[in-house]
Length: 265
Image 1 (cartoon, one colour):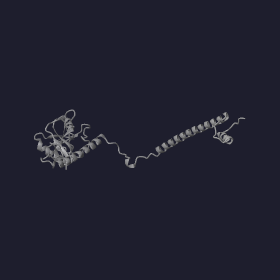
Image 2 (cartoon, rainbow, N blue to C red):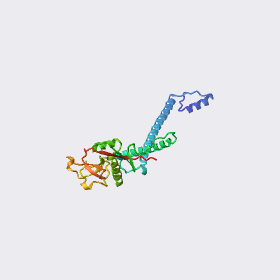
Image 3 (tube, rainbow, N blue to C red):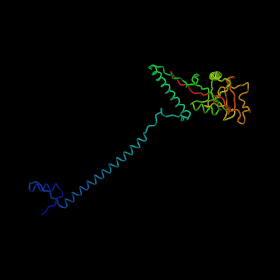
Image 4 (tube, rainbow, N blue to C red):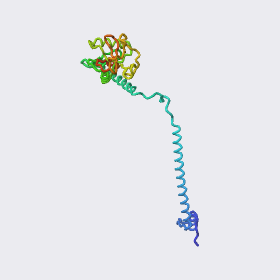
């Protein structure tokens, strides 16, 4: 009578007991069904385990990301600034300062290199050729004549501006040079006007007019009617009287341009 085995172990033990020979694997239909169920059960457990593992990993990653975001350090105090962004004029001023520093270094290197040359080399100068060096400024006294607007544009084309006179020393130095050059042309445009607002005189660089040298004996500035419809809205330096006059902006005179001098060792 054929016996049913509920497990592979029972089958193997029975064969060993009966014959003492190497076992031959035989299974009954019921044994095969039991074995298949166990395999299927293990597969399900493995699948559940993998799914749970993935879910846990996903949750851990989310929690870690949230933790790192909340823990993100703020900018260090040294990098926090309340200063407003630089204006266009401020940016240009920084660029100019940088160029001046680079030029000064190039001049220093050029001068050092020139000492090794057998022939004399041209020295670096604080001002371009044809300009006058006064204190920390360079001044250009033109030979030709233009109206005030075109004089302003001409100075700008040379990377300069119509001169701005803030100190008595500047005024005296420039009127002295102008007097030596002027001959019969003793009017020179300076960078002062009240074009925008009558009676409110402004320098071309928008700095305050803190000191003036108007010709008081003639009641300057008087915006004389001889100036026509627009009056007299621009200022000149009179090298003979050593003072300023307001005149019509469309008159033509020589001009004085100004730029910063370069520091040269």
